[in-house]
Image (cartoon, rainbow, N blue to C red; front, side, top):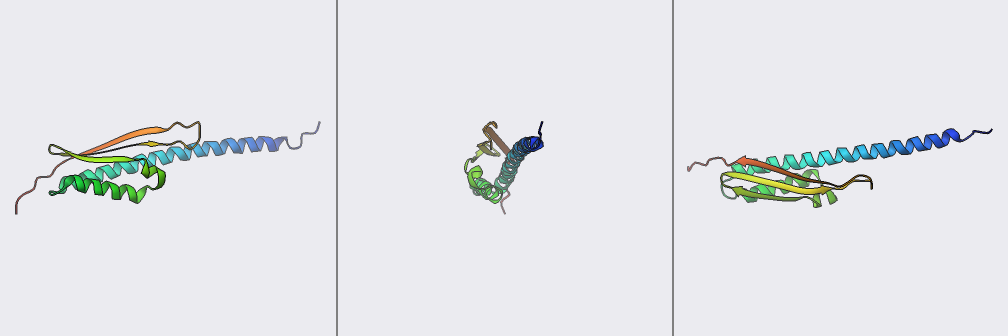
Length: 125
């Protein structure tokens, strides 16, 4: 019985499964990175908005756009919707989006992140 080439089939199957595993792992890492980047952008935006007296909502929106634009690009950034608003003495920011799986077996992951900061008191000069 000639068994030449049998190890090659096993090797190819093992390599294929390893590549699928590493692709799934990379997809998970990218999803965590995106959610962390969005959370960081929201936290920074509400802090800036809380310190701005004239237009806190506008400052919050600009900071979110700048922060997300600095670390995310392409379809990932385009699929994220953000908003800022004043809620009494609080500045609130929210981001929602859907992170797509890279393989058909990976489901899309919807996410929603929020950040809140109290407005800082301003004294007249």
